[in-house]
Length: 217
Length: 217
DNA sequence: ACCTGAACACCGTTCAAGT
DNA sequence: ACCTGAACACCGTTCAAGT
Image 1 (tube, each protein chain N blue to C red):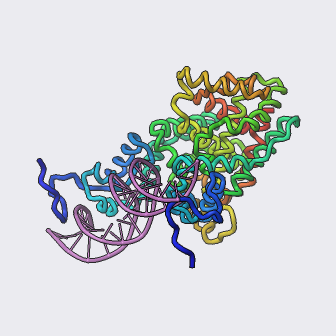
Image 2 (image 1 turned 60 degrees about the vertical axis):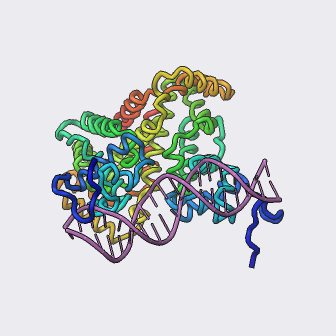
Image 3 (image 1 turned 60 degrees about the horizontal axis):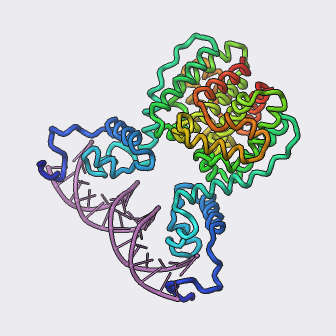
């Protein structure tokens, strides 16, 4: 059995606390138990530390959540410059999506919050450069960038919030949804019911990305 | 001074509690103090009622938030059927946006949560009908619907989260953002800096909507 | 500089008791 | 059927006390 913690600094054998270690533990916590389960106290318990110790490295709960979002954003690989618009944009969009799907329960933190926006300047450069090279006036290039970003955020929000059943094989749920749609009596809804009752997120993502890139090219 | 509340049913002169009255008070609370400020106890205080009384009409805090989202969705006017795709879709998108901007602090509830999806079948019909009439196969019509919806959600999420300053006239913040962008040294970012430093949400919305409708027409 | 514990002002919700 | 209050198991954060 371990001796009870005394006051003051911890024995030197304990791993020192650090912002980095805290953020990694927080992301683990979100992955395992979801966003609502995050609390300073529970996180401290996981790190075997007093709750107030966290405040030496993180500015409070809100800053902690911002920090998790940053960790997620940092996982997006750097864009390789120089390719044409379609290639660059599609690669960035797919990498962004992959990063979010790697941590679906934490993803709303980056999709929902006001990103400091300066943290993500490299991808912005990677997208704007080919747009400008293609002769877009800067104002229109920014519009294009923002339209694609909005689509990305909306698609991913749907994807990470969707019940895991909605996409995959849950025959019972699927049958019930289909029946509900067909019972609506609305003609176009009834016609499209088989496609409304399921959602292949990958296909939706690729479809939307394609028509947006078509529109910009 | 008012006599203290006794146990049991309230005196007959008090407005009876009801799901509807609770949801309206909750929406007011969100509008005034933001989503984080919503608590069952504070809401009960506003209604001059014991916190536990709310549970007779609402299934708990999560159901309360769902209820607020439904109220917001219900504020979208019914689509007028029969017009062509572009007219219908643009009208629906603008009405949806207007409803969210009417309650920007509550909007994330409908943008973020898994809508029961069956509550909003009328707009789905209104969008699918002209797509099918234009000869779209049902599967592609559903793709189109979902792409536009994703764009809408992403745009509105940015809009309701953005600092009010980012769009309007805050010369100091604007100057600082512009300086930061120009200091990045990234050539495309520097070129587009004047447009990256501000965001006219209305213009972004109309631009994205236009290119999506172009792509679908 | 960093860690700790007690304390304060809150939460959501269960449950038994009222009318 | 509906409302109430006490109680339980939690929160985030301030502040003084430790080393």
